[in-house]
Length: 339
Image (cartoon, rainbow, N blue to C red; front, top):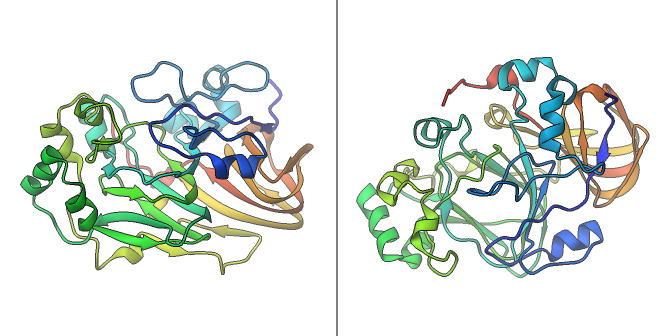
């Protein structure tokens, strides 16, 4: 099968929170109140759903099925040896039209032990736009919180205490936030990100009231007594520099946005093209933020989201543009956890 880069349409499964205007502005499409996430090159479904969230290629075939039919062509032999026909990556455009609830995600070990999955959900945010006077994200507890206190906050839905316990960080375009599994967090209204994550939809929602239909939706079917075991309760107030970085001043043909801590989970680079740039063979997702040009023979422009098969080989990215390139984990950095 001949593999070439493919332009993808928007893929916005309905969510429980508002947003989507920034996605529409970037892509040049229509907005939807509850379309705040565009799942790009997704082989992942919403939790508990059979097909919602999956990307359909322009030929009508699900990307998941195309990868399963030719994993080596899509992902490369080395990746397949480690992950099989699993892309090990989910990329989203996320536009928070309201503050998201306080929540966290399980680790690989927790997911393996309790959810029959090799992947937890470590994620990272690349801020590409903001609106409002004080665009803020909330990341990690300021100080260590005892397990019984977290359980009481969840049981009583003490939203004020949960938010007060988190580190508020005012963000601007170019900021990146690495969110290890377990670290409680929330994204504030007016923050627009390119999000990289492990390919699951596992969330433990500490603050469910006002967001979810009921508490049962928030604990992955495990019950909160068990689900809260995945929460990272340590204090991050003195070490936020490990999680939050500003990258807008970095200007090179390819800028590593996330660093070594992220490589067991994913990789992200901001590409600045003025003329041409050679890209090595890799499964990748490209999000074009500014300008226009070509990826190989494929025309791309602001708002294009492209999936690139490994078998496309070395490609030239030409034109005058800025893009985010997202790739799977660095294989040598991956720790094996079997479900």
